[in-house]
Length: 87
Ligand SMILES: [Zn+2]
Image 1 (spheres, rainbow, N blue to C red):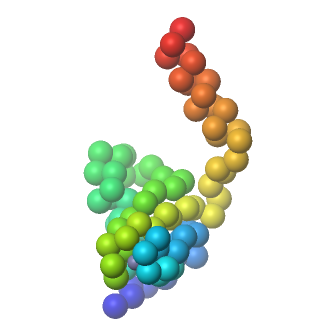
Image 2 (cartoon, rainbow, N blue to C red):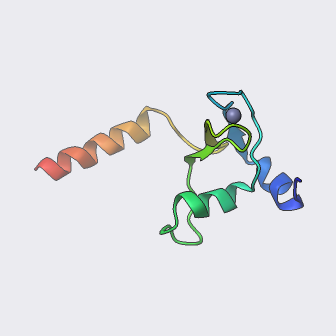
């Protein structure tokens, strides 16, 4: 069931438990899931966080790169972008 590719990539990601069944594993390698969720993203781009459908029950799993910075810094930057749009 689980490929070497999955195991290799798995170490770089933090998988939040499924909101329905609590599963903390993905059924596909993160890079494969990203290609499904973001079909228009450049091949070499890396998403810091994305959601995946639970392979067991169809619930929602949040998948976060272990190096992702989801701190206030990134929120502030987003807000600046929003304000720039208004100006
Ligand atoms: Zn589930």
